[in-house]
Image 1 (tube, one colour):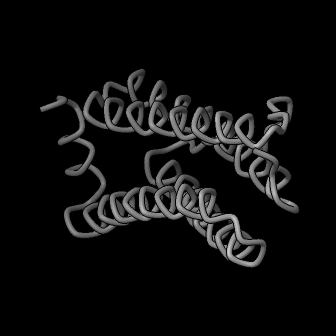
Image 2 (image 1 turned 135 degrees about the vertical axis):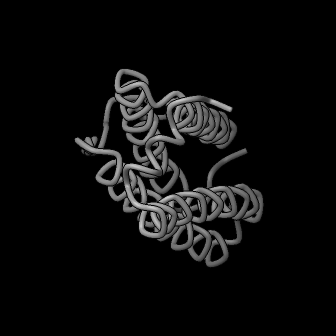
Length: 157
């Protein structure tokens, strides 16, 4: 199926961001593991793997639309040097992704690409769930204090 106007470019921008956050979350997960925060390591690693699956969906969809996925570009991986910094930069990435996906949905409506629109709507829902989790972690840190929060992250269960 041939892509409608601007869709492959849009999907390649989304792919670039997905590949960027895969790397950012993977690195944050490994840093948490190194610090001994097994619970955070596990959760953030699962988010990285989830973003990798999203990248795979985008790649498959670009190929379905007879386009060529561009995997040579990455955005800036922002590394948090503390857990609160990690949460902040991850939240920023998630909010930027929701904005990009929402704009992409609007473009899909404009050009009449309902298949891509549906895929992007599903992705927005996932990103909003990530935002909710991160905001909950940030609120928990404020309520119980950083040391208490981190002490709960040492064991996975």
